[in-house]
Image (cartoon, rainbow, N blue to C red; front, side, top):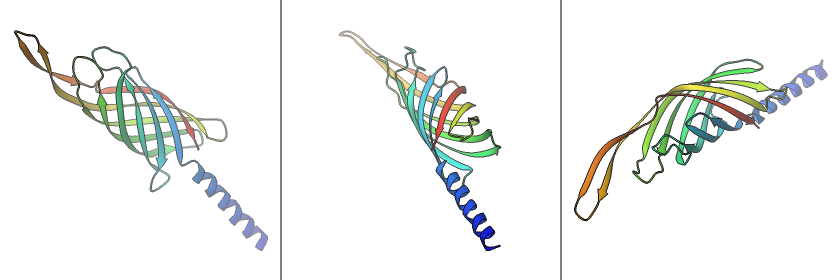
Length: 172
């Protein structure tokens, strides 16, 4: 009886240490307008996580992937089973377009849902699909100078509100 209790206690210890090893994730996320590389870590409990991300985007005039973005995302796992995970998240980020016409620092706020599908038996790899709503808008000035004339215009830089992205994550 004592051996059985010790065996069960030892197995529970092993299971909890295996779970603790999957607290971190490095991920890549790609959509039509931006590419993100990030780090995710479980905080407080096994169902609440936070992530830091940075990347490039193409939402300004020149449509090149040369804009900079960086932010924080906090989420919680709403449903999970052996192969699937559905989580809800909220994010705060900064988007900085890179072009010759204007410079503007745009704060972006968002909410979204993410579906992860784990690959393999070890649950170290996953594919994800994310969708949600984001709000980012900033007014800016453009100035044109010549010897005879100075022209100042005001315009608005706006982030597309709906997003859809595909991603890959590695858990460790």
